[in-house]
Image 1 (tube, rainbow, N blue to C red):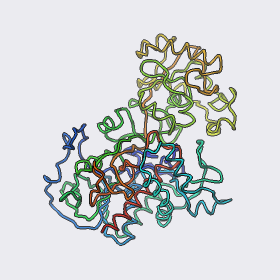
Image 2: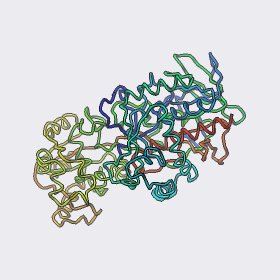
Image 3: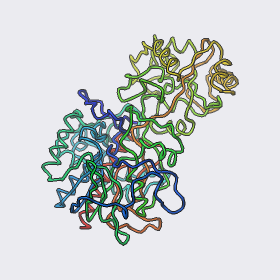
Length: 562
């Protein structure tokens, strides 16, 4: 999950899609580990004191191990954060066990990102003209963007350590190129910061396997976390199931890095107040939040901020056979209506957003409202369908006044003609998420969008005047809905990853509700709640950057604690 920044999804040719068979999250996005560990059932809403959710695996006190192992550090999850944590801990002399419930390294979400954001790296220093980017500049931008919601010392430390996290990946064999992103972002040109990974994903998996072996890390796939082992308030290891056998791994430090809860609808409802968030890569996600619940059951506090790294390529729907996904246009084209700046309404048929935000800033400013108003509905007429089929968004929009100076993302849409749109609409109608009618009133009755006729009438006035008096959308995003037949697509949000979880300090140590350190327990990546904010950051690669940065910090501190 990827998680703006496609931030996190690779654009390299030769991408091995094996790891997306179960639709891990991430993409911007540089997301966290896809290996959320555990075969536990989804957790239910909890009362004031943590208690075992209905159907969850046995608590640590009830767990009866059939085999026991001893180590210094156990890392739960081997995605972006977990891989860096395991390698760094081993390089610093610790005996490391890493467990993951996926079948092989090829399933890791952290392999499929475009790249991380980082500061003061050789890549930036050696680029043409060098860089003027500094840690403090990024730090204050991020903290002001988030209204100082994340943990400030932790955020500052992540940015300071980002060059060291990049060095871990460079030592593994990664090469980077600093690039500008297609979205308008605060650090481009002479500043930079987005590190595009040049190796294709299938080569990265081989690099990770080799690095794990060379570091002497004891790697266990197909191993699911059940609970944390505790003693006198400290975490002393993990209880897990491997091949049907209960195992106990005693450890002096446990680092949780299993990538969030995208694959758990119950936790979506608990943390995001929706059950509509789908996996951008399609299918199911291994990231089911089990580490977060295990930490809570062990006494860890959870943070107050939860969010998601949205898919920036369009809408999706649980009924769709070809939702928006990483390939950008390898999808049903009718989903582009939910992203292209057309009229968008909620379940009552009322406008709820400046539609241009979803086109210009789909991962940051546009993402929060579609989650709150899901499902949302895109409304277009036949003239718009014809224009997208023959002209495409770029020619259609530049004809209405958009230019390369005032429409930053425009070049991305050049030559993107939705030539298959008519048949894609028919597919959507057959699947039950796209609708067609001769009148707006008929569509409103069919979908229960009672306010749609009045909304369309007011919106058309804005289009005629060239001024959006309601939400201030740019004139080139005002497309009248006048020429029948009319079309509506029902859209649900999709994500590369979720974020928000365990409260941690600037050493990535898990904290209780009274902000006391839980000895032996660390969290990194999107299992850690103290680095993230909703809506998603406006910096490409920032989520993945925070994942590897926090993995580096957690492992550094875990080794110190030994």
